[in-house]
Image 1 (cartoon, helix red, strand yellow):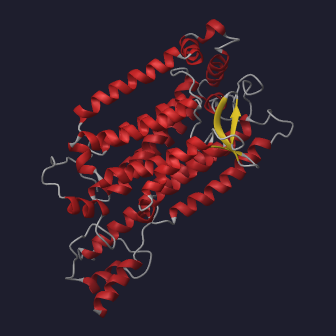
Image 2 (tube, one colour; image 1 turned 180 degrees about the horizontal axis):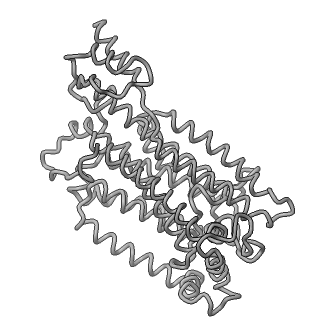
Image 3 (cartoon, helix red, strand yellow; image 1 turned 135 degrees about the horizontal axis):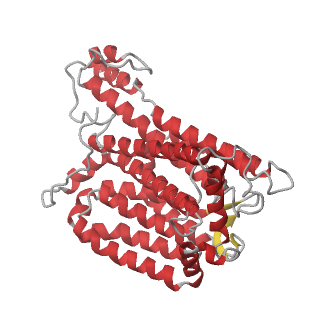
Length: 447
């Protein structure tokens, strides 16, 4: 018994590491964001660094929250999945309470915290992804085989969208539906069953966009912004002029003309246009490449987690990757005139307190997923007795020492850290003999 205790203790001493590619892309994009917020907002206030200082304060708080997320075990977060869902609804309802909710330009999307306003949908994005990840773990076989299990998360998303449309916030509503559909597909949903609700949802959202006058004006102005350059097309025409002035290499950092009272929201929604003007086509390609690295690595980590039966971690990685990719695509598309204006910020780059805080939390969760994946892989390698040629373990005893101690005592659940995966526990408790066999998403064998 003492030998078993020592073996368990040594395995617990094996830690992981945060994915360097992921961390590098996050730091690079955050650095670009600091520089561009400073450049795009320098002429907006009497104090040239007002928005920069504000951005740095929110970024500092966001980094602290990210560090907290990076140090929190994901299994402890999973235990509160129902509370997270209740939190989503509470956050979207509280904006309608007089005295707490705050209205800006006719939209009730914020709560007043005294020192600042907080846009609650930014927190909802993170909480909803974690809840949906937990749901897909608990009902992963049923989601593939039965209508009720597939429709429940879509019903939850629909209820959240109704609350968002009452604010109104059409952009975030579309984003939330996109995340839901993407995670259900990656979670193994039956595509034929998924197609009918998807078509109905697309038709309903299209109708809302067409029959609401101000949304219809956005669509018509997007199709021909030059027809009303000083009216509905003002934002887009100035954004396009900024992009055009950048040409190949840009006009130089700080030399943008369009940010000087011509381009509205130059430091938030239209910061990509200022970036294109100052850094040109080549500079914007570098930024898009950084997003590709971030999103691609997140999907890759998610696939690795699924292969090791760490489904909760994998679905969190998928959800965050879908969120960042969709929001970045929409924000860049709006700035380039290929999508109607949606009012979504560019993640990690745009200024905006709520967005900065919750994007940092999401990045912290993503890094935690990569840490726990690396830790699980190292522990599995030790359990398999593969001491020869292993990468040295940087935390606690070396892999060869631990392997020598546990040689011949390989546990049954070799893919877990210390206990069976929660999805395996739930599956064994319910029994899945009546379910269709799942086909897990895969990109092929990964080394």
